[in-house]
Length: 494
Picture 1 (tube, rainbow, N blue to C red):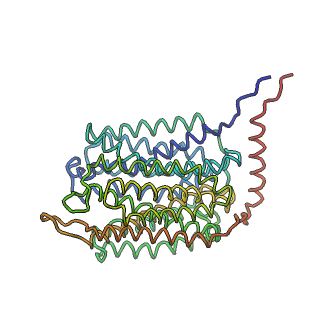
Picture 2 (tube, helix red, strand yellow):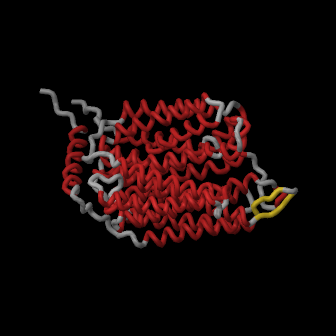
Picture 3 (cartoon, one colour):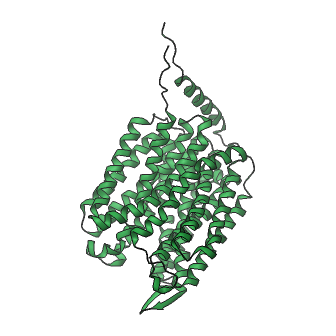
C-alpha cells in the first residue's frame, strides 16, 4: 500500500513564501544604483526624481496595515495573490515609461505589493504544523534581508552593462512568477475574522503615516525648521491621536489597539522600531564609506557594483542564522532570541571602532550586524502571533512590519542629519567627515542596546489571547491540526 502525497507540502509553502518575500524586498533597492541618473533619464529635477524612492516607502507603509486586515477578513491566500498584481503592474509601468509621473505611479504600485511579506508570515500559522512554524517564520523574516542585499549588486550590474529598463522587465517577470506559484502551490485559506474593512480608519492611518514619514524622510532636504516639514509633523501629531480615538470606538477596527496595548505586543513593537532603526543605519553608513574616495583618508574608493558585492554577504547571513534563531526560540523562547539579536547588532556596531578602515573590516561589521538582525526579525512575528488570536494575525503582523518601517525612516533621518552636520571639505566638495561616520555607528550601537533593554519588559511566557476570539483561537487551531493530520494519511482502498 503506497502512501499518498500530503495535501499540504510544508517545504513548497515555505519556499514560495520566501521567494515572494525576496522579490518584494528587491523592489526597495531596485533603483538605488541609478537614482543619481534619474533626473537625466526622466528629464526632471533632482527633487522630483527623489520621489521615485520615497513613494515606495510611503505606499508600503500605508498599504501594509490594510492588506493585513483584508487578509484576516477575506483569506490570506486571496490577498497574497492580489498583492502580486500591483508588483507586476508597477514594474511594467516603470519599464515602459520615460517620464517622472508614470515612474512615480509605478514605484507606488510596487510599494503596495510589500504586503506580501507580513501576509506570508501570517499564513504560516494556518498552513504549517506547529513543529515547522518557528523555523519557517525565521526564514521568511530573513527573506527581507536577502532581497535587500542581493538587489543592490544585481541592480548595479544591470545598470552598468545594460538598459535600466531591464531591471523593471526582470522584476515584472519575477512578480508574475510569484503570483503563479502562490496560485498553484498555496492551499486555500478561509477568512479568520468577521466584519468589514474600516475605511475611515484606513484613511486616517494612511494620512497620519504619510505626514509622519514624509516629514522625517524629506526633513533633511527641505530643512527641519522649514514650513512644509513642520506642517507635516504637526499634521501627523494631530491625525494619529484622532485615528487612535476612532479605532478604540470602531466595531471593526483596522488595528485593534487594545490587543496592540498588551504588554507582549506593545514592547515587541517598540523593540521592532529600534531594531529597524539599527538595521538601516549601518546600510547607509557602510555604503557611503565604501564609495568615498581614498583621498579622504577614510573612504575606500569602491565602485557602486563593488560596494554592493561587499555588502551582499551581510544579507545572506540573515538567512544563514535563521535556523539557529528558530532553535534558540524553541529552547529559550523568542524573547531571548530578540534580546540576543539586539546585543549582536550592538556588538557589530561596536566592532566598527577598529574595523572601519578597510573593506574587509566593514564586511565583518555588516555580517555581525545582520546576523543580529536575522535573529531579531525571526523572533518578532513569533512573539506577535503567540499573543493575538487567529482573527488578527495578519493585521497584527502588518502593524509590526509598519513599526520596522518607521524605524528605518527615523534612522535615515538621524544618520542624514549627523552626516550633514559633521562634514569636511575636499577639492571644493563638502563630504561627511570620519567623525560623522563614527558618531553614526555609535548611534546604531546605542539604539541596539536600547532595543535589548526594551526586550526585558516583554513577558517571559507568551500571553494567551484574551479577546472574544479566544474560543475561536482554540477551535481553529484544533481544526487546523486535525485537517493537517488527515491530509497526511491515505485511507486504504477496500
